[in-house]
Length: 125
Image 1 (cartoon, rainbow, N blue to C red):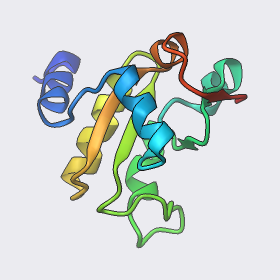
Image 2: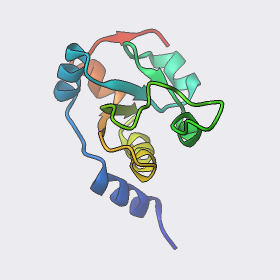
Image 3: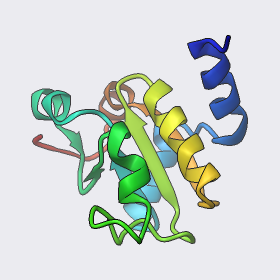
Image 4: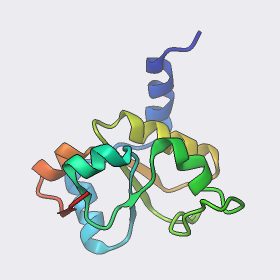
């Protein structure tokens, strides 16, 4: 039986983890699509990265698939996609899903609290 740790280890092996500072530089350059994978309740309580798409982890496959009505057209196969969540685990798992779907440029910036502590731009949830 696979454990949650097994899934996280697999995800972390294929989805690069970047620092909040690296993410902030990408945000400032306007070169990446930021996606917050937390559920809307948490985003509402804490806010999120300024301009981030809000795609709950459970909707990722649908939002990343152009053949569904839930497709988010910011998620193109060549986009630089930076994922964030509460602590980094959900972002890693969502990133693994995107990699499995053929997305190449996916990274995990970890938890929103780290982003905020590093001075990254935020907006209300």
